Length: 508
Image (cartoon, rainbow, N blue to C red; front, side, top):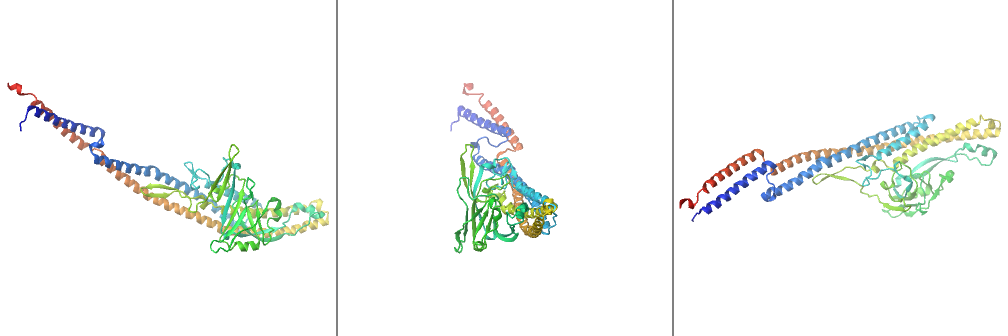
């Protein structure tokens, strides 16, 4: 093969270009710290880099955002549950004291105020937030568990369907025709017939709210009570209910054996004995009713029941929204590692139940009833010192008769108070057990999250190192390769310059 000067020159220039490319490549590696700057330089490194970068970014999201966010959610939930436990313990202490009637008359009003405050504090804990989200509200993290002071509660009304197990029915001791000291003059002059107080036991189902109605804001009668037995099919009936307003207060608990009274004021369903015997064989009892007025601190029905919400808009129109409580609950999960998620929330309806509020109200009512009876006795005794009455033998006899009857009423109501407080010891101990179980569950999830966090830290460090090894240039190696490329390039320059000095013309 004939070699010409032009061939030598061309080869020398091409080889020198390669040397220059090597110098440029090593220069870029040293200045950028990366092995390649374009995917075409090394497709294998480029593809691996994309995969490793994606993995590192995901792990960084888990490490720096998802796991800390879940940890904070757990911390706030734990703090709220601790506070709820303390409030329940305080109420349980009152129950123990009340069961032995260790309260004196002067303390009872203070105890009533304390129970109301404890109830309010329990609900305030249910409105705990994290990063602007309500932590006990299930999926509705933008909505508090109870109505709050800062919103216009008057614009809301609901049709509520509440389902019960028949075991939710209980008994209540009441006094029919209780002594009314304000009617003394009417009793004396005979315009009103005096009735002897009559202790009675009634069957009751306590709804979740007080001050309810049978008709909604549209005037529609929504009140229904349905008992079903899906297993045996022997019960499937809708029962007629008599609505008792405050005007019927004297007949609240005066119920016939086949009757049902709905007391709007207290939210109680009172059953006659025959109705009770029928209902206790049912599998479920469904009650639909309306509540058209709420107060700050009342539970939001959509967190607890199947219901329809009516909201008055600024233009006067009414927005209607149906809510169904999912049987599976409303668990919120955070992804904290590849193919690993953890539930971060605890639902408030599991911790602060509507039954808890009813139990506290029962304690308050029992104390109030006893306090009012004791106050009636004090008022009657003072009347005996009043010249208007002690100068009349008939008046004195009537008042003494009423004092004797009110003392019997006090004995009944004191026994009822003790029984109510005694029964609620178990109730609130059960609530405490539920909260403790929730705390244990959160503790288990926190432990699991800590283990996952440790694993994510290890994975993040490992994949970050792999990413660095795949993409980054080792400084020592880069310097050596640069020096070698520079030496080759300088040698190529020298060799090429010597070859290209002489041509064929120099020999002619």
